[in-house]
Amino acid sequence: MSEPSGPELLSVRDLAVSLGRGRARREILHGIDLDVRPGEIVGLVGETGSGKTTLARTVLGLNGIDRGSVRVAGTDVGGLRGRALRGFRMGGSVQYVFQDPLQSLDPDLTLGRSVGEVLEVRGIPDIEDRVAGAFRQVSLDPALAARRPSEVSGGQRQRAAIARAMIAGPRLLLCDEPVSALDAAHRISVLELLIRLRDEQELGMVFVSHDLGSVAGITDRLAVLHRGRIVEDGPTAEVVAEPRHPYTRLLLGSAPTLDGAGLDRASRAALRAELERL
Amino acid sequence: MSDLLTVRNLSVHAGEETLVRGLDLDLARGGSLGIVGESGSGKSLTCRSVLGILPPGLTTGPGTSIRFDGAELTGLDPLEWLPYRADRIGAVFQDPGSYLNPSIPVGRQLAEVLRVRGGLGRRAARERAAELLADVGLPGRVAGQYAHELSGGMQQRVMIAIAVCREPDLLIADEATTALDVTVQAEVLDLLADLRERTGLALVLVSHDLAVVAQVCDEVLVLRDGEVLERGTPAEVLRNPRHEYTRTLVDAHARFGIERFRSHV
Image (cartoon, rainbow over all chains, first blue to last red; front, side, top):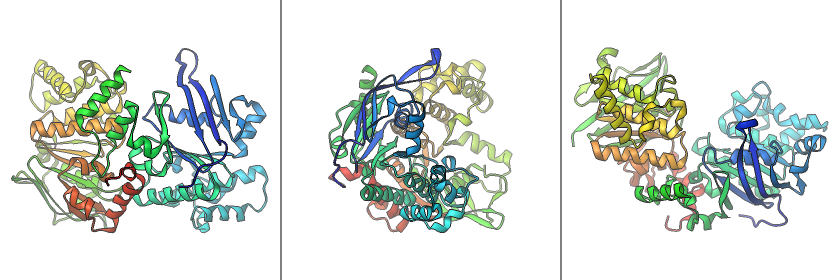
């Protein structure tokens, strides 16, 4: 684990975000604080509907902000409009890696075209060489650049999706369940890749997952999101050893582990009852 | 304990291709067996073979024997298989939403099974359905609700109620908790354990996650590419994995799971 240093890459303060129109409009995030420093991997954990994806999309500048602020590498994302916002999205300082590269990579484009697309748009020369370099950076044979997403394995697809993110030169990577769809061997190798990229590039990473049990080990810090609020935030080892919020205790006690150290049924039922009362 | 299910030399073929190869398994009455493997490992085809619902074009090999409570199931025609599949072997799958009828309240769907398969009258079926929904931990209002009004966890509880309503001897749960949130998965696994204790139901639990089956089952089979790589009690398989692939599964948890932060592992 590298020692995180320097000022925050991502700094979210008292962030409130609503989605939907008219009467269907609902506040999804209720005052979020979150920091990510260079070289730090922060696990953002929560269940379906907790607001994980909304938070990640807001950091990308895809949602409006009701209250609070989102700063990415010094840029106030919430204050951007029009050309400045498009410039931020194009600039590549934040990149996104999705769960299912079959959906995020264009099925008609070769992997090489998909990876090089952002360079094409920016009018950067020597695209082929740079794409080959990006493939090598994620331990992918550059010869695969001629294949389409459906012609490679799931692990290779996810490497290509990571190469596409990396070629834009990000300082912050948002990974949304990046290994959930992969089998065990590919899961390990993609997690190892993300750790290596973090070490080499001092990347900051937000690692979004519902499954704390199988990804906690990649994270330096855990932020637990529950019903649109961060209910726990601390170094992973401390959160695992001494979870303070009942939801975190329930989450840790529910995760299937090989050591069988989860909570028993009665303890989980007691925590659920406690959460209902909150 | 007498054997409830004995599978010998199960092979599944798609034309020339062999998808499951020489699989043996034994399950005692009231026992629990976990099958671990990734997509394409043959775990779902194994379940489907026992249920007699292999996809079109797939067949079991001539040397395959599937004995359930003393009766040979291979070679039965669909009508002969029905009493086993509908009454004595229940099954739940990954996506409960796609098995429930979207336009009929779930309580009525359950009552329908009790009427058609169990021969209960309308009123008795409705009352029994309410009891069964309560048994799987659902509040009374759920009977009148439609599938889309329920969360994934609640839908899966309804599917479990339907699967066990004929008091089967065996329940097959094929990735039944995979799509659920972790805390809900734990509740559904608890429910399965609870049903086993209460009714003496035998369980085949299929998952891609070794930790899930290790937590619930007395015996574990590790499958890859249609073959059994390893079998034993969870403790044996976890402490002393003999196959490289099983070591990878254990390694994934040890390095990237919560286990890494617990000193006593």
